[in-house]
Length: 455
Image (cartoon, rainbow, N blue to C red; front, side, top):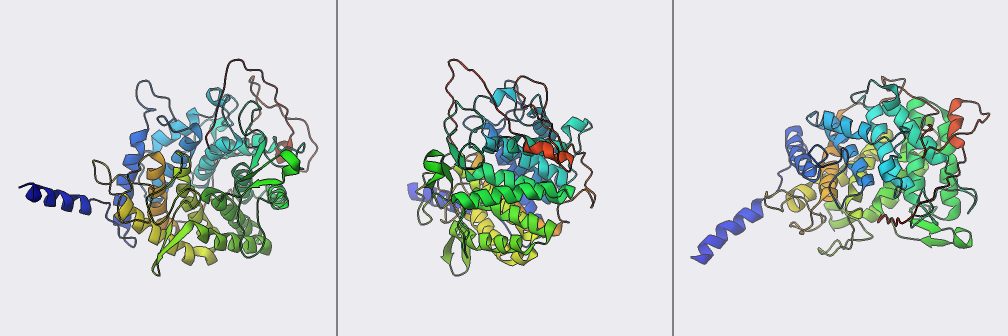
């Protein structure tokens, strides 16, 4: 009798998954709708007691920016506008008093990389003419420029001849660390702003960031361009942390692809291809016919063992997103990226997204044949991005100001009059975007607060 009950239950568990045909648009849309709905299970900003734009604990503010970027992709690639007003409300609510994504509720803990992921989200909104806000201070392009300007104003020549520190504020752990995600995000946003606006000053900044990262040893040269995690400022930045994270690789890869698309400069093509080659470190050759994405620094691809924290469990989402953009910016990359996305999307949908009480909650590992027991915002985001980016070629390339982009810009955005504002200096440059090369000194006294950011 017990066996008779158990066998149907086992069969039900085995078939529970998200069906996916990677060549069928309807199948892709149905799969992504289920995953997006699961992603929003972790959002209560539209409920009593919740904070607009913020996801539930233990998800930090930066990952909310990443999640809204994923839902922007969902709206665009899936042609499903169910969540558009929710996305717009979140992105405009969290801008802060100076419209630069340094809101007062985050100033004790916010890092440069945290701010950047909101900037990346609104850059995507500008490139897709997403529900343009009527207030010019909230225009997507202006907000992206504000993030770039305030981040670049923190460029630190005092240690290691340049680079962004991980943290904005001195009291936060990591202020003595210059990491690839902060610098790579500045590079990435600058590359997209260069292409969108046609302003070569952004290219100059990208050159500066890339050269600094290479010079300090965060980028390796040759056939394989690896991106290392970061470097302590002690001993002139000679102490490099050689962990490799997928989102760092993606930031630099897609940034180079945008720069090649805009400038036509062969060096950016060569760097794109070398970074793409090195991206194979994040793909497990499960068989001759399948290469599946995994987070190499905290996952074992041959088991369910993982040490990834809540932040790291979302990193595959950004690599998937940036691979999709790269395949459009540099068409020579499309075939290999398409193969990676197809293999990973199939693994995520049929194997990983088979957990939970609903039978389609997504897990962390895509390299095994079953759900691994992990679940959360990062897992949902990653599965959503890898599947929806299968449709990148079904749409025109990201817009620019010359190809129909309608978002209003402000080259000097981001500096206001609030108490936490970073006031710009008056500089003589060939164009207004020179406001982005300000050096700011922030002095803040805080009593009785200890803040830790676990990225």
